Length: 596
Image (cartoon, rainbow, N blue to C red; front, side):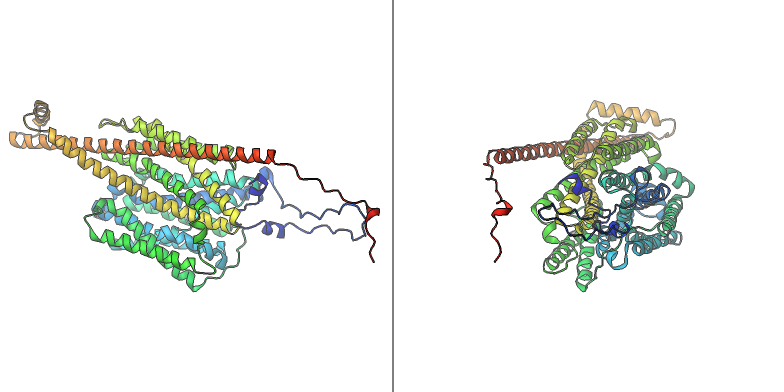
């Protein structure tokens, strides 16, 4: 696909017809007869839409507000999605819940959020993006305000569910607001990179600003920021509506049935994957039933969509070999990218490090993420996706191998370089991946572009908590194994154990005078150190697995690139060796037979 074809893409996946409608009158063509045997006069070309400074399609001051709206929406959605998981330990006291119960707030948020983005596919055509955005942001603001009225577990759970419903289209709207002011040739590099970088920054920024907000008002402080961002987004959406016209679409009864099944399926999968590692997969029967119901609902929705004339989702296209290969690549990357969101964050939490103590680490990750977005904006072009992915995999391999050397004495500053590399890898992966998918959608038809964007964002959400579930489950299994092995070495006859307990007892002597109680506390302190050491060893194992999986992915990527290059070379040789067709010589005008 050439760059001229890529320039035909628009933010909402529509054709350039909308721009031509506003391009002004077209000069008339003279109707005087042409001389015979002369070349045909060229057809008039519609005037291009008006452009402003930097090639923008709107005044720069207005474009700044559109970009700001995209940033507010993306960061508001990222903050709302990660605010519970990032601050779960600090919020347990405020909510009066256990660690397992606190997970339900995240599950309640993600259960509707994972599927409601798909509703934008037809709702945008039925009601228009502007009205859809206005309604969703109003509900999002209402959920933030209702958080002040919630006072028990169930009310907070209902508010988080409502927030997840309202925030579902925020990512798509942020994406469209970022692309809307940009010229055609900048949408797929600058706009794409900026939008995805903002979406990826949400969790890191939440870790940076949460300590001060919790100190000011615990959960209420976090809620104030969430409601404030929603209010700002509401004002911006009303003042600066999206320019993209709606494509007329009809919502059918089959759409409602399919969407309800998809919502049930994604919701069940979200709840199971978020809570499964805590309750453990084989110890709670309801986890198995939840996964079974979710899988059955998704399968039934797929069967219905396959037999519809105007489906909500084109299942045949989504399950084609090319798209399935692309989806498998996305899922694999989401799994290995859990090294940072679930790996490094879990490691420093196991070491007893709080968010305020790890602020330098998250600043480094944030800077690396922004750097990756800038690199993509400057260098990303169609055909360079594999190079970006290869660099991202190399950074992932190097960063994961560096993290395998973690110990119980590791501090956040020891992870600056490795996590900075992984943050850079994450930012270098997403924009090229999305560009590849958009090119696949464009080959199918312009109407598939926004459909792909929505499906991409939905699968990224599902892949995110699925990757965290796999990572957390692996760490839990390895922690149990390492704990058993370490305790086997802690026998009372071991002189090192006796010496360590004696050291702890001596340090407790000024505080605890009872020798028996002092020895018990010393033994408990030693057991705590063993648990910490076992957790660190488990995370090292997980980092090593990530490095191995990334290495295998890099080998497959390079092999696929080599095979594609060889096939292109053979095709060029075949074209060169093929005999040129004989030229067609037309008869002179005087030799043409006369009409009867």
